[in-house]
Length: 343
Ligand code: HEC
Ligand SMILES: [Cu+2]
Image 1 (spheres, rainbow, N blue to C red):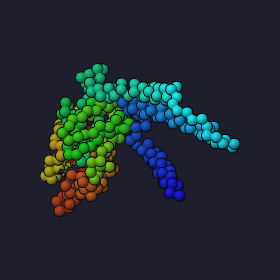
Image 2 (cartoon, rainbow, N blue to C red):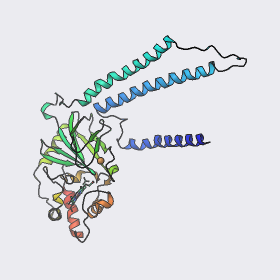
Image 3 (cartoon, rainbow, N blue to C red):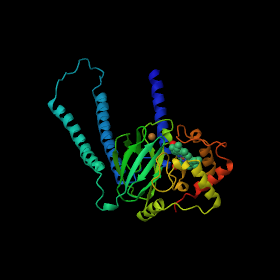
């Protein structure tokens, strides 16, 4: 009875996992639809080991059932069958087969491990290789393009078809940088520098996630890799590097003053490297999401500025109640944030 209950629970949980895994398919937060050379290699290896394991399982169970049927006690079998101890041929066979199977797995694993660890730039890309310094924070991502001298927050742009090298750091606790459609995951650890390279084979938005439990809003510590053709990528870089332009709209101009008065600017860079206390907002209006999960619309933006922690537990951004930030100033601030866009 107990066994029946446990099996039933196991079965229903497995079915749940099976059906829910479909939900991931809608975003590309999946390693099962690889979109780059690294993730393709990982996927191929996953399939290879799956085939090897399936082969072993099928053969072992086939032999098991055949033996069960063939050598069961038949009517009239009164005597205990002949007892056999040791069989050299059999023992050699079941030692050699696993050695062969493990060798089949070892060859691509070893060559691939070297390929994954190779942080040398692709000779074809050479000097143009993009290096990005990643810093994981509770609960957002900082992307420094040090050679290009600017910072981006939460959305990381890369050129398509090129090996991009990431240098991984953490500000506070251990996080893990993972873009399943593009490659494997690597932890970001305080005080330790890790490396990872990724390449996207087609333009697109690839979802990334922090894959290491890092606090209350760990589940909302997402980011996006936005892969653009080289020309579009260069245009984005130029936009991020450009001197900040005075907003033309008067309301937005007013908002810019509020942004400085309320010392938002102390935590949020607009243009250049800025500070690292909060995500850079240089291209904020181009972001699809706010705080990495809310739709980036005015209503959510207002609620966010009023009390970010209420929307994202543990977010290190102060609340701005009406006593500190009037509705008028809020309107201006939102107009300013909406003007922060790169076309
Ligand atoms: C003490 C530093 C600090 C101050 C001051 C601050 N913020 Fe933030 N802000 C943060 C942090 C940290 C985050 C990221 C929170 C998270 O996602 O976990 C954030 C997130 C945001 C975001 C969302 C960014 C994104 O990529 O989704 C916006 C917009 C924002 N802040 C606007 C403001 C405005 C406007 C002000 C001033 C009224 C302000 N912030 C003041 C630290 C600060
Ligand atoms: Cu994290």
